[in-house]
Length: 356
Image (cartoon, rainbow, N blue to C red; front, side):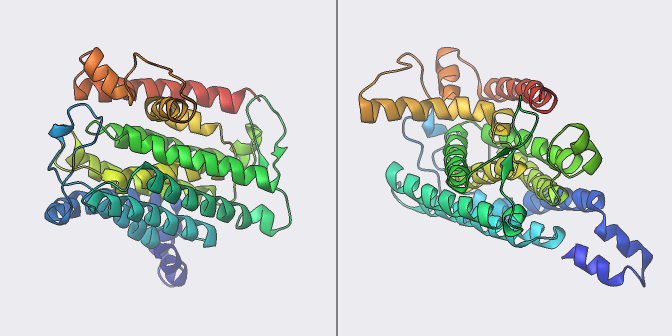
C-alpha cells in the first residue's frame, strides 16, 4: 500500500520516493511488526484459550493454564503489516492468505476443549500444502510465460528442469514436514520462534541480497529472482513480528504461540524455500527444527505402521531428551540449539552457494 502511495506522490513530493525504496520499507515494516506485536499481544491474553498441557511433553504442567494460541494475534498482525508495506502480486497474496488459513486451523485446535487428533490435523495440513504447491507452480512467473520451472542445486552448475508433478510432490512433502516439525519444536519457551527467526533472517538476506540482485546472482551462478526483494521484505516483516512475540515468550513465558503460530511459521518458511528454487535450503534454515521434531515423526511412523523400533533410548522431541537425560535448563536448550543452527546455517550456505 505505502509503495503505491509513494508512486502517486513522487512527482509532487520528492521524499515520497522513499516509500518505493525496499531498504526503507524493510526498516519500517520490521519495526512496525515488532511494535504492533509488542503492544497488542499482551492486551489479547485474556481473550486467548488456556493451554491444555501437551501430552507426552516433559514438564507439561508448567505450560498448562497459560494463554496459548498467540499465533492468531501475531500472524494476523503479520498479514496486515505486509498488506501495508509490501507491494504484493497474486502469488504472494495467495500465500499470505494460505498462511493465515494455516494459522486458523491451528487456532481452532488450540481453542477446542479436546485436541483434534493427529490424523485430522495432518489431513488439514496436507490439503493446505497441496493447494499451496499448485499455487506456487501455476502462479509462478516462468510458468505463466510458458517456461519450465527449474531448481538450482548444490554441486550442479546449471539449473535443473523440474516436471510439474515432481515440483508439486517435492513442494507438498517439504511444506508438510516444515509445518509439523516446527510444531513439534514448540515445547520450550522461545525455542521454535528463535529457530524460525534465524531461518527467516537467512531467507530474507538470500532473497534481498543474492537472488534479487542481478549482479550477485550472476556471480554466484544462481538464477535471478525478479521479485526476490519483495519476498525478502515479507521475511523481514515476519521477523519483526516474531521478535515482538519473543519479547513475551522468553523464559519464563507469559504466552504461547500454540498450533496457530507454529504451523503458520513452518508453512511460511517452507514456502520461502520453495520460492528460492533450491529445496536444499531447508537444511540450512531449519536443520535443527527437522532433527528435533522430524526424527520423532519418523520414529512414530515406523513404530505405528511397520512395528519397527528405532531410537529406543532417545526421547523426542529432542529438546525433551536433553532436558531429562542431560538435565539442561530451558535456557540451555534454547542457547545451545540456537548456536548449532547458526553454525550449520553459515557452513551450509557456503557449500550451497559456492560449490556448484
